[in-house]
Image (cartoon, rainbow, N blue to C red):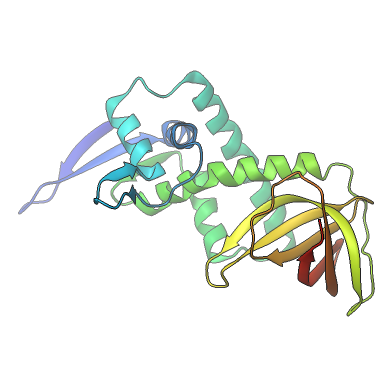
Length: 222
């Protein structure tokens, strides 16, 4: 890490960190917070009870000595994993704006603050995404290719949620799951279901996409 000053009327201090340090600090923040927090959390008295991951990572870089060798190794592993995923995605379709920024973050060998602050924030968000992806891959390793049910058919199916995403605009969760027969299934449900725990649901088949069946109007039976 090093710093330098620029400007005539007012000095603006810039700090540079290697990509190795930035990804390691993001892993450290995820480990300390036991999850990803985009913003600081406050109690009723206005006291900060949990700092955002980017803040935890920033402080770790400033203080030094907190980031472990394991954090550094995992950071490098995650960076490589995401790079490979983006390369595969870019072959099949155009990357979204977010994916393009993520690609920039992965390719950078050095991050300069404040100009790369947005990309550093993206790096911090990706540790949880990586852990979710690894867990989902483990739970779907025995999946089969194909779909089930007919469009508009209402059916009962036993499945196991493998990942969960909260959709703020809709006020509901989107679940990726796998049936007991190994078919990948996507559905929306307002309540929180435990990842990896099998449940029986009733839903209406609304779409078949590649090897995934989407069901709607889902009701959990047990």
